[in-house]
Length: 59
Image (cartoon, rainbow, N blue to C red):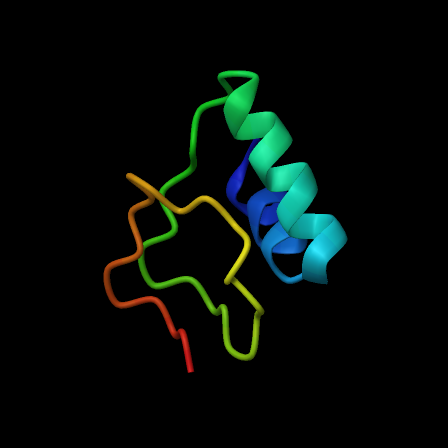
């Protein structure tokens, strides 16, 4: 998945997080989300292990 698709999924609520997790479980490469705008995204159910989130806006 590319960065734009990853952001769409992560900002997509519980359904988006579930799709993110399925794609990770299937072995898809995690894009670099350094500096990504994830403001107000609900990330509690997303598996973000090893995700590169340096300087991402997580407020």
